[in-house]
Image 1 (cartoon, rainbow, N blue to C red):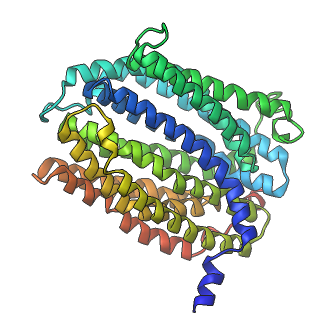
Image 2 (image 1 turned 90 degrees about the vertical axis):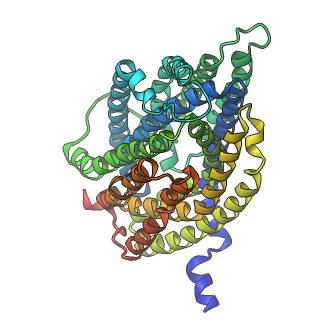
Image 3 (image 1 turned 60 degrees about the horizontal axis):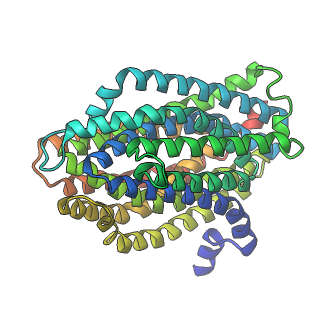
Length: 466
């Protein structure tokens, strides 16, 4: 029994070496980025509750944009990974062009919404039923922050287009290095511009936004220049801008598989913001506490998020090469590894979370609430890790219609109604509401287990589509 378990779920040294060569640079890249966001959040939190809340609300809106961009590149990325595994660089070039078009469209829509509906969108998260904070000031600070952050949408979209394509090929070190340089630039500029150090003006929340967009432009420039200077290693970029053409069969295939994924990411990210808005009706202290909680949770979640992305690369390349049995075996081992690793991360987060809220310059009631949110998030993390990994397993085989049902439909049909009803129609403490909403991951994990076990994702889509 033990031997069978080890054979099915435990890989050898070569397997983990290959997985970690892909995952570790992505984990480091995102850990550094999240750590700087973490410090950025703390610095803004030193100014006051209203500033922290205004920035947190805008970041929730920008999160929707970021995830939509992720969906835009990921839809084509399913094909890009398998084209690369097959050795078809022309096919990979077409997927790169599709990403450019998708990201341009998403960015234009985001600009239009932010410029015309900024006050209305931010106000959705402001409610005066709480006992702390001034919602008028929070709205003002949120608008100030958003007005500057809009300038960073373009470099973020372009970086994701290039970085996603490089990661499909296993080139994870360059995006990591670019992010490393950018985040340290961001950190230094945060300190100088938020507080007005060394002759710089004290710009507060606008300074935090300016530091972020400067870092994003730097990150984007580094990756774009490296990609074009190393065209012999990045064959997809050769002639990528000579023509806007995407062959109709490839375009149809990407749209067929990629559109559900893009819609899924948009609906899922919007759904997450709706859930946060449900919590926000309980007052500004809930907005502030959840911001503190999500800051540390996002930092610890990086491990399972990036290991999930590694699943899409490792399994996707094996599927593209027609090695279906090897893909199944690799996926079993990676699912077990992700959950085991994240169980340890959850325990560590629960311990660290007791002390983390003390860093913020805010009311004690907010700190207590944040600690409770952190503990609940730590308890649910292993379930989130499993759900995330099953999602990427299904996606690696192009089952984007299934992932759409698994992710977005599930969120909107079950999770959001639960959050809406519990937050508005009960007198339960917000921590109880938060626990029940987060616990819905258990149902999703059961569904994901049976979907993966069915092997519907074991498909070579690039051969299917020519």
